[in-house]
Length: 187
Length: 306
Figure 1: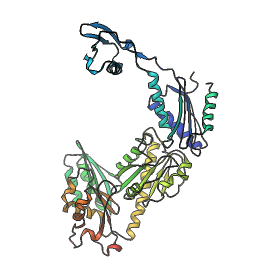
Figure 2: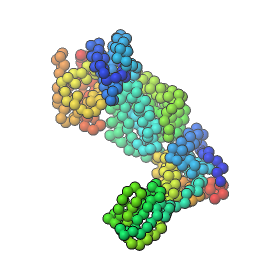
Figure 3: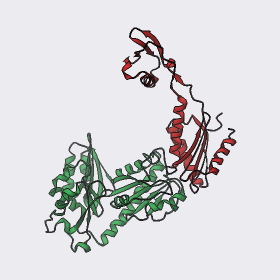
Figure 4: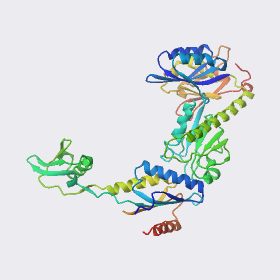
């Protein structure tokens, strides 16, 4: 449940905390993840130095399969795919090329693809919105974290993300602190 | 006393303004033609500004004062990653350009973090070639005051530092301007433009102090006269594709020609009074590409002034 879309930043430097809070909101809305990541809590202490971020992930759309994008019919020229949803054509073609090779695929026009095979294509997943969302979330968090903090430990599931970054090797107490944040949030 | 001005207007008949500036004894520093618009950076004798303004009005162009004309400023960010670009680094550099400065954005190789923050020898040399360096730092006061000064403590040029928190002064810097820090959005509000204006004001003040210092022991030749002599005697300068083939500094200039090829010719540029360029200026290779750097000798070093 979304309790708060506000970012809560904790830091010994109050002024810095306020600036980081503003920066986080800007970056999240800029990269289109403001609605996918919520209940965000950040702890940052430049003197340690450590950056810990915890946030809940929104449930994303289900995976897209070949049958969601195209209908298949067998013809004399091979298997014909009529594309219903053009948005995922690139992902579909990538999958077909990977499976059958470029030479066996012919795109006749925007909505028709021919594959030189007599068998049915297994209904595989071609696009995973969850993976895409996680990628975007991690990308935005890396933009929020100070650039010098290159040693990173993160934990991302379907429900939450925990991100710990530092300039020094990650200490056990920081991981414990991150776990405590998760516990407080009931995860 | 020459006044730095920026003319913005149409391409049509803008050469009349250029000629007027020349007739008045002024200098044209940069000409940028963007489709049908032209921007000229000019220096005009203070007494004749009204004439230039009158001509600009006749050509339906505008004249604005651009206090940073004739200076090259290094805008230094800890790196060129998205943590600093395009906001605020590029925004600030662009604002300085609109005030007439030539800016170079420099991303440091090891500028980020606390433990590894340092300046390499070539970065130090490159920044020292400028008239002033502006360091764009982050959000935490303890980083700015306790650590990051290591980046600029050894530099010879005046340093202005910007960052997020408010603070009166930071070590080794000429001035500190707060309210910027790390940003993921551009400068839109009036209060934000006021901060940019205060940066320009502070840079102007630092450069004025440097000018005053130079006046105590004046340069042996005016940099603008030197620029005109070089442009006339070495026509290849005009063939450079750079927008400013000669970039002016307060006490010299950067010439965008290969050092090895043009070193001798530049040294032998002659003045009508007799001396050659090597008598009044020092020529050395720049840290930027293969360019040349000219540093004009002061009157006390050269023994005379032209």
